[in-house]
Length: 92
Image 1 (tube, rainbow, N blue to C red):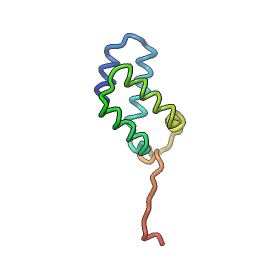
Image 2 (cartoon, rainbow, N blue to C red):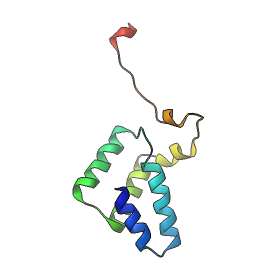
Image 3 (tube, rainbow, N blue to C red):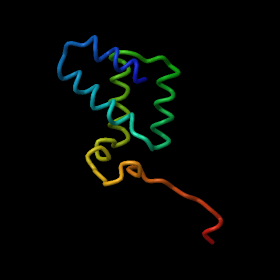
Image 4 (cartoon, rainbow, N blue to C red):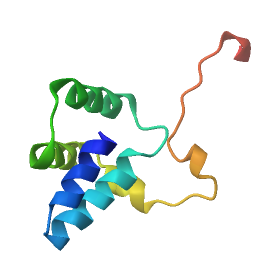
């Protein structure tokens, strides 16, 4: 997906569109994306979305999952930016 975004970025002359691509790359390249987001991204890869269609789908995912709120929230340790659920019987 990164390669497709890079190609779309380099072929576009629209500055706003390029800024949108940079934002999407920043959001979707983060570690620890929620499982639902990862599933949708895998679906996009399998379907072969490229160009403006890919950007439109990423914007839809970005909006649907509230990723803007997570991008604006800063933590000191970026590796733990996304909440992790730990289940273990040893806690009991």
